[in-house]
Image (cartoon, rainbow, N blue to C red; front, side):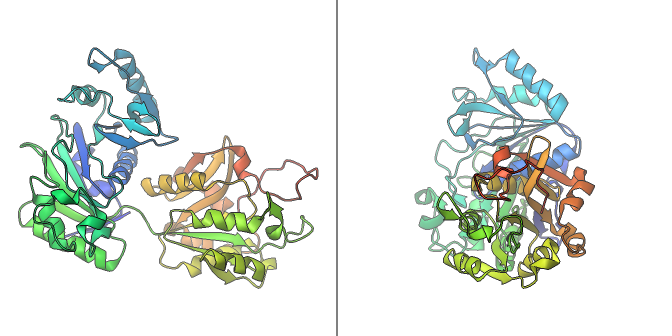
Length: 445
């Protein structure tokens, strides 16, 4: 995560843009499009690190987040039940944050949609220091114009954070805007000045902001220099009207490195070409790699067959002619091939039961947490893949021989996010299916 302010300030903590949240009680309604959920979970992690108690909820709908501290928001007589409030209070005491709402299939819904005044949010605010409310929907578009019934901002809100994604720049509104037909004097193609105009419009992003509510604008997805400069240009236009705004990159540039250069000495043949459920093991790993939510990806290998498979997936290869020098060499070759990354995700090619959904969940948790390391785990077993931020580049580049990142991870447990998954997904294939083998603990990288 990184932000740029109009006064030249830069930083890596989104809480710097909301300093008032570090003391007192607040209800923050997050509206707009292009990163609302990412902003909410990043704020949650940083607030918890500051010792603040946080409740995350929604007045509309929100994606279900596996692995979060969850409490069902049960209601009775038009209010949250005393039992639900007691459970939330207990979890806040133990975990410092709670995700709550009404389960609705794959989504989380508003607990009491019939409560137009959102009095249930006031109930929650009596329990926590900060309540973060996803108060808008955008159907995954980077920018939106609200309908008459949107957004759903609770009257007790103290601060509205409106988000717009800079990936819309240069495109027609009809292509990347939710409800473009409602954009007054909508542009042919969206420019920085158009985003600024939408952000200050009381029928646009500023809709529903009442007197007494602070208003802040986040121009997210500043992934490239050009987008960052455009975000700052829009923010400067808002500054002239006393509206605080910043250009932000909520998701770091994560490079994915598939390590596929091993000699398969225990396997008896090149296990990367061995079929698992009729697909070569390397093919399964490359298919998974192609589905990951990353900035760039590369495979490090010593085999032409694996490089050819990678090419079929549109994935570049780095050749490691000396796999006997250990896995550290492959790690470092991958890092150098993805220079400019804010972090690296390292995967091994012999985990045929690993699922892309689990790895993407790991990626999302790393992106939303201010800590620098992340790994999948099952109970006490920590496995691959593993993510290292660029803060650990010197330690990774100093590794030698067959030493991977396990030592670094274990030396910094306070800096690691662990994401639970099934033990089966963490298993590697050291010998052919059907042969007896000892159930040994897998070494990280």
